[in-house]
Each structure stands twice: as C-alpha cells, then as structure tokens.
View 1 (cartoon, rainbow, N blue to C red):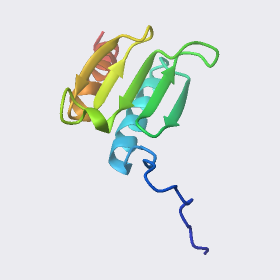
View 2 (cartoon, rainbow, N blue to C red; view 1 turned 30 degrees about the vertical axis):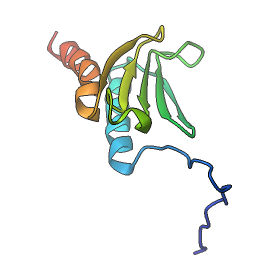
View 3 (cartoon, helix red, strand yellow; view 1 turned 135 degrees about the horizontal axis):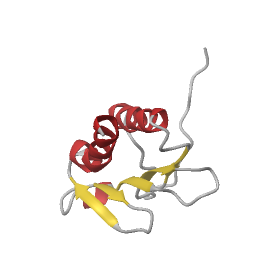
Length: 114
C-alpha cells in the first residue's frame, strides 16, 4: 500500500470544505431510500473552499430537485446546513443535519403510508 500525501496548499489559502463520514453516510442513506421509492435517479457532489453540496436529481438531464449544502462559515449564525429547493429557495436551515433533512424524510414516510 502506498502513502497518500495531501496536495500542497498555498499559505493563507483556505482548505477545501467537505462532508465527514457520518454526514455523508446519512445523506447517501437518504438518497438510497429515495431511489428505492423511485423519486430520485442521480446525484452530484461539489466540494469548494467555503461550502460542500449534494444535489439530488429526479432525472439525469433535469435541474436538481434539492440541494443539501454545508457552509461552516454560517455555523455561529443561522446554522451551517441548508436544504435548498429546485428554484433556489432555502427550505430549511439549521445547526444539525437531521432536522434539515426532516422535510425529505417526512415526504418519504407519507409515500409509504399513503
């Protein structure tokens, strides 16, 4: 096995923002349940300097249905997590991932019950 060396960053430059293992597994688990329900077909992930985002698509060629965004700079204010709808409107914002994902999980429960 080889050794992985981080790509050298310039001094004063912010490092890349990402999801940790628990956050990503929670998001991907929800994505899997939505795929099994036939609601989502594709996803995309973006890692930037100031944010990380997960997009879920109904079909590959469409605009994303939802975007789950993590912005650590907003941690002290309105919360680092945001659920953004299809047209760019913030549907839910918070400090914890669970409550931000709740509207999507609620929609999944209604499909099973109804």
